[in-house]
Length: 252
Image (cartoon, rainbow, N blue to C red; front, side):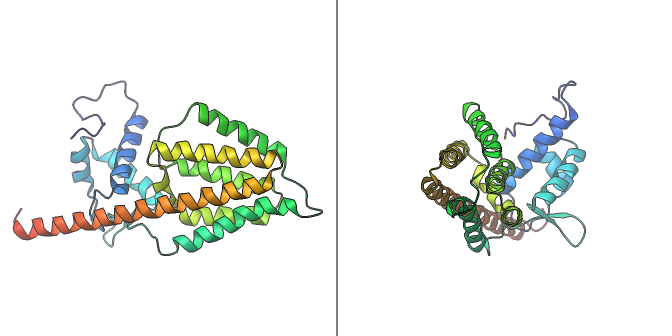
């Protein structure tokens, strides 16, 4: 199988070590999020290195990064295990998230409340226009860019407590929200919806911004829930296949 990674024998001498490390991290992250490794399976460095055709060092570093992402967890023996996406509180947290997002827009409709700060929103709009014109590749880490948009929108409303609470909710759902950015179509739609929201706020069309924000967050939740559930199913199926293989070939 072509993994898109260099093997030990064909790695060009000019390939930066950081690039190789990032490639290994990206490939392992992709495989985990697609459910290719059995649920709760031990991710042995030596086997992963052989699978990807690299040394154990970039694999070890990738596992540390994946642990920080919440995609793997430490086992009792100190090794790494594939973590199951946590969907238990997802809908409740998304409900809280959309409440905070909508409040950040709606508070500007109240008498005596200052409107959104254009000095914050205009650079944000320009940043996302640039992304529309030069779209980034699908990448789960795009979740951080997405979070920055929503936190900046909230900060422009002038309520710092609202903003810090939103940032806290985002951190709690970040692990599963990464599933939203695995395909180009979701990156494209996210960019267009973000522009729709920020441009509506800047134009003073707050009702339109509220409608767009509610639709945007709701669609994201549906995609995240569906993709994460599919990954869990694949992990469970692969775990069953491994169990059957071990039973049929106990000495292998």
